[in-house]
Image 1: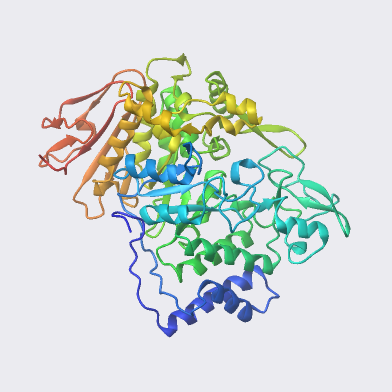
Image 2 (image 1 turned 135 degrees about the vertical axis):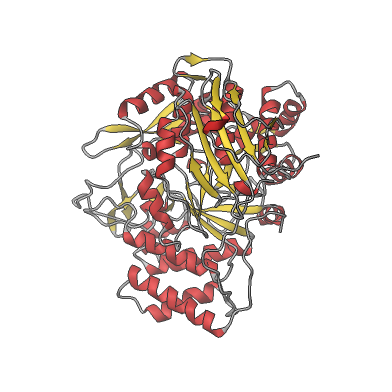
Length: 595
């Protein structure tokens, strides 16, 4: 286990009462999901899968499995490639050699055999894609870093063995897929895509209409069948045995379907998340569940449950609001949103990100930005080389769903067009994210300052390919060695900020956070460590113009000495003015190590 790794829970030997509690909880979850099931027998069956030797542990409630040391890098298994070397080995070498003091977790996007969607249409859940490596490479990564893996269970590939069984009328796959009738009331179903929801499939039993939320190659699984759930639990157990400690529940909000509803975040979906958490935490109390729910903010927050669902939720509203703030030079919406966010209870936290393998989602900004402002942002991102993915609405109309763009290129200017502040703006965005309540997750291409990959978009015909560049590792090393290169400059700046962050108790994911009311050109907030010994005032100029802030506005404690952790500058006159250069960030603290 690496220093500062996510698991902080103490594992205690289990008593008989813990096993009884385990069964009791699992049975209760099953009663909600499957009212007519033999709950006792099925609960024992699931527990036997997770704990074949009959051993489990007593999980502590409201236990934080993280601290300020924690940061996750997001990467595809082949974001880096080197001739003669397995891509997963290359990824490990890069992470060990360049990021060992910066991150302690790695989210490897789906590393299984797949047929489309860059891994999210899984053919075989139990194998590693041989083009990336094998389970030994996954084990090697999990030995050095906390491994985060996708659990893609809303759908699987149309080329999977299960789906071939479905078409042939053969068990078990025959009953594993969600079907509906074109005559069903599906008008309220929320869609993230524009393809037809129901796909006609010829089977040995005639034409059936398979439910396909995302694409015709990604066929939705039917969790109304408890035997499918049993197979998924086997997969969860396999991943735990292979070193996975963080489960990312991909597209989990779409899991349960009921015609006549929007089929989004239904009660059974939430109960399955609770069930998975219970099954996992009694066997591995240090494991985590993170829900990926690209939804309006309040619906996203619901996946915390009563501290009994996700340990962490993606902070999906942050990317569009932060990008908008830096585009227009005003943090008004960012401040309003942050003041409305509830502090995460102990045992839960936010996963903060501003770039990912997908794009900048727009649904999480609904109700937080006006339609005109979103249209303005979309238009400027298109001018910066971005692409726009749409979703279908009831009645057949379309609406922008996400902006597909490299975050570095998204930061090349403001609403007035490109300017010379791209690098400063980009680092400012990440400094804000690093200082916020929660665990930071950094896309590998943000570390590297990767540009839009327009050639990949042309090659694949997929908008999301714009931000999924694959680096030749030898070429990357040459670029990184050139200290004058933009990529090296960004990488050094990112690592510098993260190394500082890891040393500050006030940046614990659950440390106190309050928004400061300065002018809309300066986004500022206060963090305080849980022992109340350290305060940090994160003060961020979100404009390309110099900003002046009086230290008296911040109400610093006069008996303390204050220093900017980033620049090292001391502030002794607490009535002086802070002069913030364009996109300058100051982390002002009363507790630091003096050399």
